Length: 97
Length: 486
View 1 (tube, rainbow over the protein chains, first blue to last red):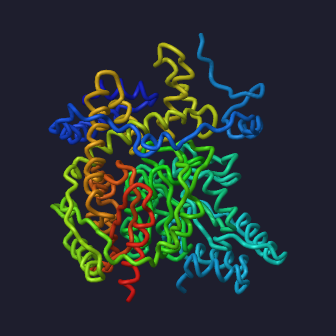
View 2: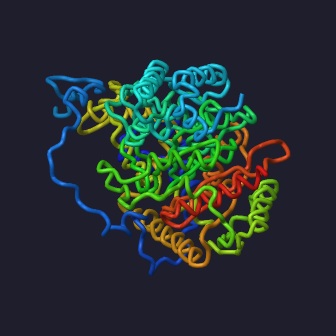
View 3: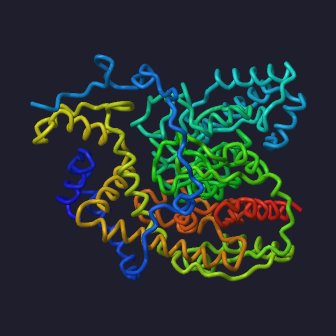
């Protein structure tokens, strides 16, 4: 992976990395991806993926909960940790010019 | 003074031989004495602890029955939400975060009359194997303070191993309970995936994360698991199957049990002293009537690559929530507004918040995870890893056709030195090779101490059982613990 690729992936992940970080991560990520490439040696053409281990096996045991209205977080609790609150809502910097 | 076990302490508090307040005060004294050196606790909840203790003593004075963990201090990994008590995940991102609710496991401990002295150190967002990725500095191994206690649940392991608390809770995604248990000489249990509710656990990799106990002995871990396990309407992945009698399983005869020893766990990279200790434990079990049998888990060596694709992919998605909007850190990033064509100030805030709030390892994993899920790479990396995961599961399915449980080392080495692997992320990942396969297959697994090395460093014997067969796992671990003590 080169610096340009790291920059692209960092944009997808909403991370503003510094030049120094991009340089270092390009080296580290390349080493990790080279290691991960050992999986290519395995023939998995007839193997289904495992997205879930246990829960999927036991689907029939699971059931829907009843559709009842129950108390959730209060408005006050939900906003208590917000870095910025305006008009009883989360406030963010402007994003439309 | 050695700390009493979970069972002994609960019995004595229930009988009124010792008050919960006395236990709480003793716990605070132990933390005050040792935490400065060991850095196991990030937050000590003194006022709350003493309030809980008084409430338990009042309850007893009124003649009400006390719960199964009456007056037992249980430390909580700082990834578990606690109402009104700071929960940091050892990250700058959540440095001042105070959750408005309790995790289900925390509610269940409270209902069982446990004491909750505080929140323990960990690798940031549970990403790491040495506790060195904590934004608050590493916890230290009580057997040698220049060594890591393991990770990510390092602080919870240290709290138990140093006798600050008889039990604690951790979370295990790829070995984060078992490996620190092995490194510190504690008992550490990762239950079957879905056995314990994860409501209120800060998510890392959702197809792998599971909460479990550390304790000073096997029976104590079994009691704590029996309190926290079982269905929860707030976690759809939590299994509805009824829980077995874990504590009753400790002490059950193991004669005739068929136990597999996987050859692939005894190959290159395994420390000779760890091998000797684990083989001695296996020989002792055999002489006590356990039928030992060789088994093959052929895809073991692919577990590290498989895990680091799947876990990082899931983490990149889970950690998208930390964006400076609803809770946690916000950095405006004003100097970077011009960098984004669209949504300038907002995207600059996201980027600066995440760059400032996350540490190096977390950024590395978010990037790797974002990459393996990105257009053009999904099939080659993510889907491929999910297919190899199937091969790893099938290895276990085949093995459990022949044996009731599997025993092997928990970690290839004893605790390594602080700083030894921090410059090489891949070397750090490879230290998890023996704990990752059971995680990928969703199986219950635990670490129980066996004979230490000549330098006095603890070694862990790992016991792996089939899905929801925690009772077999506990019976075997307890049998070894009793044999070792005799």
